[in-house]
Image (tube, rainbow, N blue to C red):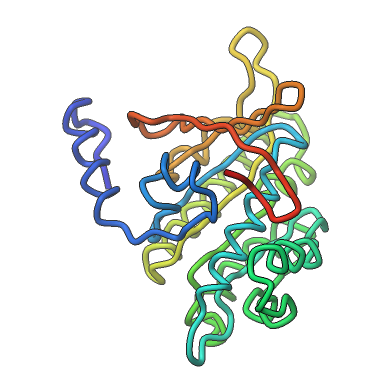
Length: 252
C-alpha cells in the first residue's frame, strides 16, 4: 500500500513495482491488455466508470469469459458476478464464447460463472462474506460487481446525515472487497455510473470513495459511434485506447 505522505516520485515508483509483480487476467482485448500491462491485476480492485452505453458491462462479460476459458482440472466457480441491476445476460457471454471459441460449448463455459443477484445494500455486503467463506468460491479468480453504487444510491436520500451514512457504508464495503482481492489473490472488477460535475465534466457516482481503494480507474466514453477508455489512476504512459463492440466482444 502506498502511504499518503510519500512524495509523488516515491508514489509512482511504488505503483510501478506493484504493477509489475501482479498476476494478470487478460481482458481478451489487445488494446486493453496493452494499456493495463497485460490485463486486470489480481490482488487489486479495477474500477471502470462511464455513462450508459459506453461498454462497461460488455467489458465485464468479456473478462468473465476469458477467465472461464482458462479454467482447468477440477476448477468450479472461477468468476463471481454480483449483479446489482438485474441486467446479467448469460446468453451474451455464450454468444461471445461461440464467436471466439467455436469448438467450446457456451453452456460449459457458463458453468464456471456464478451470478449473484443483490437487491439491497445489506445483500451486497453479505455477498462479500459469502465469497470469503464459501468453499465453492475457493478457486475464484475474478469478482465482478455491476453496478457497484446502484443500491447505495437507491437506498439513501439527499439529506446530509443520509449521505454521510451512505459514503461510510460504501467505503466499508469497498474496503472489504480490497481485502477479498488480496486474501484470495483474485481480481476485482467494479463498474460504476457517472454524474455531471458541471465544468469539471463527468465524475463517478458517489464521488471519490472508490478511488481510495482501487489500483486502476478507467473512464469509458462514447462520442457519436466511437468508444474510448482512459486510465485516470494511476499515472501511466499509455493511458487510453479506442475500441468497438462486435458480436464476439470488444475489439481490437
